[in-house]
Length: 221
Length: 221
DNA sequence: TCTCTTTTAAGAGTCACTCTCATTTGCCAC
DNA sequence: GTGGCAAATGAGAGTGACTCTTAAAAGAGA
Image (cartoon, rainbow over all chains, first blue to last red; front, side, top):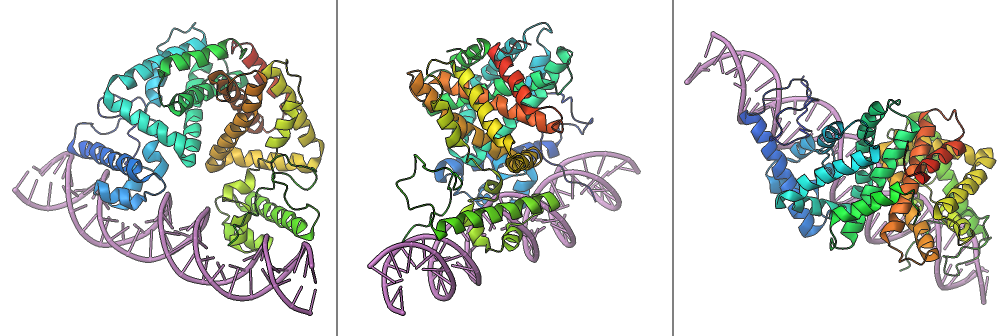
């Protein structure tokens, strides 16, 4: 009786090697390609239907039908309906970016650079930009998704916090480190929400910089 | 056809006047007393069962039976199962505390004082202390509750942010104000989780002070 | 005691999610 | 190619949170 574990590729088939996978099967096989394809089909169908009818008014069965798979397959790829929206495929990428920063850089600066890189990559192609916008609008509008997005941010924070702890020679669940990442990611999320709330009329990057600058000056305003 | 709106008393029958209510019915009637009583019965039953069998393994029907009410009544009092745990009855209290602070005090200091007051009141009687500990452990252990707790924190932040915005003469959804409250409440939540994670062996108040001090010095550590 | 209104219980229905099992399908010798 | 193997899928039943409707019960006030 084999455990099914189709999910969490954590990266599309562009990135060559994943440091987490236990020397898994090759990535060019027909099987792998079909999986990625199915995953994307489900996600596309979901985004389309969410945009048209709204999140709550779109049953998973409907998404399955639209993506031409069975409902059980949807749940095999995404543990919950929310997860269709909330990819955290970027976590490992950001972790690598952070590890690449000079060890003596102030943590706040390191994270600022990582954010810049990450956003730069994301906003480069219109594809990724559109998906980000759709996702953030769902985060704004759907309470269940917003709550999960927060949680997801916390996890990212914990991951990157571990790296910073290591770099500064502190225990991995040091209070200061945890508080630091909580503050930074909470602030990033809030600035992003501000951006979405205001119809994305200003550029996101300067908004993030303002937010992080406020943090750096000890929240004096 | 009257809309049922039993829920959200937002305060037990101790506090005399609520600034939000539209001059509602008196608070000493038998009806009101029974409502408060039912609400508490449900909550007590829930906490007892959660402690004994775990959150996920406790169906709402079971809670209803234990509290001797029908399942529909449970949902009339608490919109979701999570809400049985996540009271935000303290929000308005904290808002009043914040309004009572001197207008020229630094916002970070004001919130620090409010937290101290609030925690002081909460930890005074063993009743409230126990309920807080139970709640925070559920927040730690149950992802759904943790996510909602985060959300709830954000709402509190938005409420108090409005007061701070007013005080500093800024628009109510000013970026700086939003980032400020996001940082402060994110940090408070993280420090509280740290406290719970470490078995509550240290006092919470000093931990919060360390966390807020880190914020004040611009996250340098 | 008699109304009026609020609160409750009961029950049917929807939907997210889980588990199991039989069928299909890409994979890999041979 | 072909046959065996493991992985992926589909189908269906089951659980549990939550919604909505309706009729009975119970407090408030005359």
